[in-house]
Length: 351
Image (cartoon, rainbow, N blue to C red; front, side, top):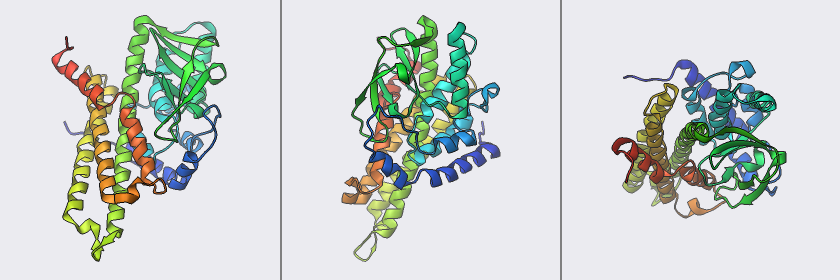
């Protein structure tokens, strides 16, 4: 089968890349890293309003609530661009995970809860609502200070709780821009989105979309780290010549590029499988996440090798992309977790 993105999808990607180049610069990122506000203070993510105006935040929300009604195949390139910019904010959790989840539940809840769900979906589509999630049992909420609503898998239930009703406890994060928190669900006004088998099925589908979103962002992160490194080795000189002319440096960069280019089509295929309702979509998502996680880790390692000591300093921009790659490599299941899922899908569950 021959697959290619449409001209519209590529043009949308290019427009988002241009926007993020202006709205989410390394200087902007560093200001987020250096922010002293604690995790209980709400702060809008960089470029969020601009992305919402462009239709990116509400891309997967239904047209009836002001969204674009598109799917993961339309979103995957845009998430890759958000990774390239190391964009802070819950775009994966809001657009890839929650919008399709809420759309699938429309009309399924009772009374006031259904009205609240519809209101959340409209606010999400307009960019007024940012949502973060905890669906993997780890209990950690990323982007907790920039989210207005939390969707949490708790035992055999899938729950939604607004910020005003939540008790958050900040946690340490390797990526200072991607703040983490745990949430207490005791007391407060909680909306039960689903229970039992329905909750398990919805959580599994949402988890796959989140893992794919993280994989797409890892592609962008790896691509930008590689670009930074190539630019550096062209300028850094030893023995009177650029270090990029050294064979060892060329080998490092070739290994990094190879890992990235092998991962990219795997991620795109997983998006195609999800949108097409493939019975093997979960397996394909796991392949995408482990390929992308490994690629980003490889590029980060080679980037450090090529930069030398300066690559380890917080004054140099590389660390912001590298630490985001480390964080996302572990989020939504690490490479080992997803390799085990692939093995179970092919060989059957292990005894």
